[in-house]
Length: 131
Image (cartoon, rainbow, N blue to C red; front, side, top):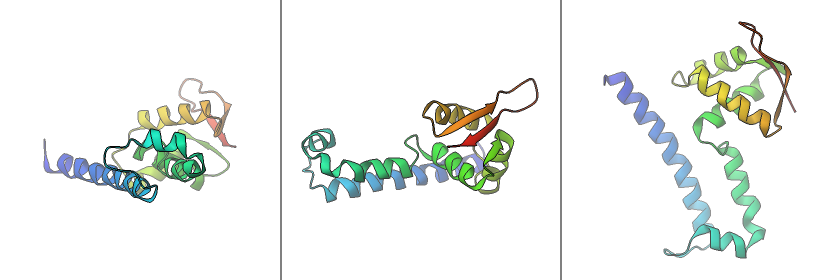
């Protein structure tokens, strides 16, 4: 393991810690006791559920990769390819691979947040559209 890899791991852990701190802040706002689970509290109080859902949506629900890909999609033109998303992400975070981006695009397609206009054919990338 070299210094660059250690720095990348540190940066990823910082991002993950930020997400955990957001959830802790929400739990404190909802008045959770130390031993009480968040599931119990949410099932009792559905009025607070949109607050948690908004934080999950902010983080992509799948961690930093999902959030980074979604932000790159928002900055891309209405119709985009994996290459467009990859180039946007590389400017900010070079640790995300094209395979991770492809997996996230497939997940967002299943969630109906984006739509595949043209399927991938050989070396030609798929074309997606934001919904």
